[in-house]
Length: 103
Image 1 (cartoon, one colour):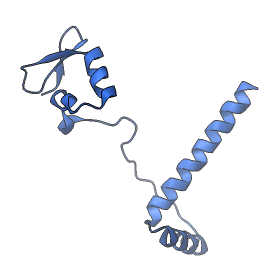
Image 2 (cartoon, helix red, strand yellow; image 1 turned 45 degrees about the horizontal axis):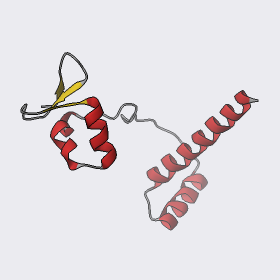
Image 3 (cartoon, helix red, strand yellow; image 1 turned 60 degrees about the horizontal axis):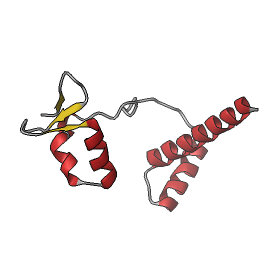
């Protein structure tokens, strides 16, 4: 089990037999070492902010047909296309807002 000591700067391996500092862990990660696997608990890993939340959106039939054509052309499901386009638009909006705030 991955756990940190009270110091919070030392990581203990899943088997409890080894410890490394956070700096050592970072170095191993940066080097692409597989050794960090001993210190990761993938069963309890979390990705903050990526928990899906279901929303319902009603689209006119012509829009669904256009989405389906585009999704088919790209070889992806309609939902993936919608998520991809929304993410692109939100990123674009955030960049524009940051640019305007800097002016």
